[in-house]
Structure formats: structure tokens, C-alpha cells
Amino acid sequence: ILAINRSSVIALNQEILKSGGKPASASVFRANIIIAPTHVNEEQKPYSEDHWSSLRIGQQEFKMLGSCRRCHMICVDQETAVKDSEPFVTLAKTRRFDGKVFFGSHMCHIPTVRPTKEGQYPTIRVGGLVTVSHSDE
Image 1: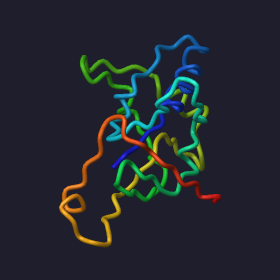
Image 2: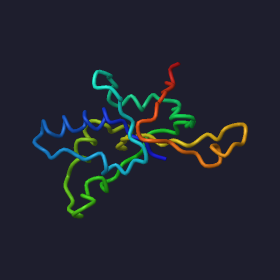
Image 3: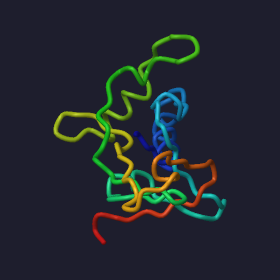
Image 4: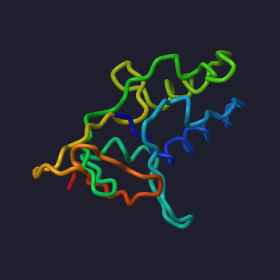
């Protein structure tokens, strides 16, 4: 499962716009889950997902497995198949660690201890309550 943070997409697009590039849609990252605040006045720090250790979405638990390494496929428009240099160029400038480019985080579902129907067929919903645990807690 791949999760991205909407605040990270916004921060990335601000950097892309500074250099005159075209902003990237969140869809180019092919995430399964996009985490975003539910209220306009809530603040979520860009790239905070780098420090999450686990998530709870509704009744489902997820363990963070680490950052997602990115290749140039994120530069291909999924509707037109036209390739651009963004967002990879900006990510390479701002999110390169040990020679690799990262954006988003991998995670896995943690089944409930007591087997239940919900545990066998885990479901999350758009707008579901998300609780984040940080690796520094």
C-alpha cells in the first residue's frame, strides 16, 4: 500500500511553480491512500510522512514500512502518455537521499488480533478519521 500526504504534494508543486514548471497531480504518484486534513484550518507539515511509524484509518491499523523510491514514470501523464521532466526534476533537487529520489511511504495493513469479518475484509472510507503515530513518540 502506498500513502502520500496532500501537504507534501502542495509543497512539491510550490517548488515546481517557482521554476516555471507545471504542477503535478497527486494521481501521478499512484498512491492507494492520500492523507489530508479534514478542516481548512488544520495544518499538516509537508513530508511529515517520513516520520510516521503507524496509521489508524477508521478501525484499521497500518504499519509504515519506509519511503517510496521514485523513477521517471511519475513524469508520464496518465491520460495522454506525454512525458514531462516534472515532478521528477524538482523531487531530485528536494527529496534526494543517498542518490535516490523519494516521495510517499509504503505501509502494510495490520490485521486485528481477534478474527472478525471486518478484519478479514478491511475497509477504509474517504473522509475516515486518521490517527498518526510518529517514530519519535
